[in-house]
Length: 168
Image (cartoon, rainbow, N blue to C red; front, side, top):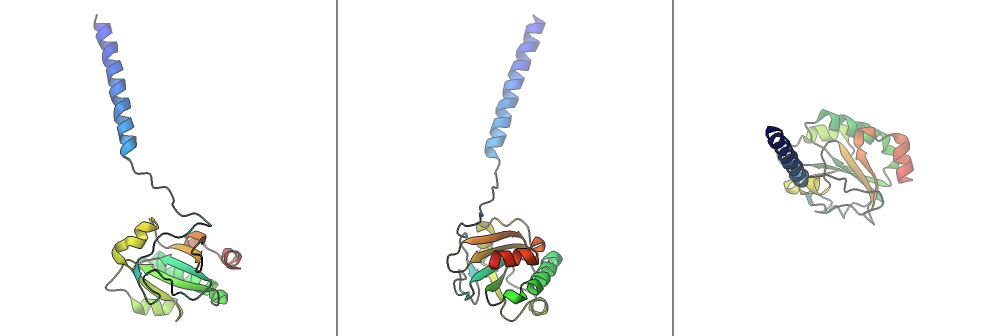
């Protein structure tokens, strides 16, 4: 008789554990990548000289760089990208997007960018959320006219050959 109760309790425990794991899986948030090459960019909501949705960028392509002025990897990657993309300045507009509102280091910006680099301030981090940015420096290159993505990923991994093959 005690063997019967033991086996019954194991069966009940297994079912409870299965139910608990099923509920846990249902409650987890799966952050799938929403960006895809060839699809339109998510909504942009920023304060910038290029408009709240960056539609005033006048280059063929726009490189939207998600960054923070206190992030050394962001600063170094932007410095390298600025140097690599210099030959493509006629086609490529660069927008630095930061969640910072106060205390943005403009002196730092002058050292690592050109005069035509646009700084955009994210309104309540809406654009970071819309693009589901989870690390910086993150970049998205898109066709300014069609707003379709041509490249996205870590700015630190973008090299000269990939920039040229993407833009040209």
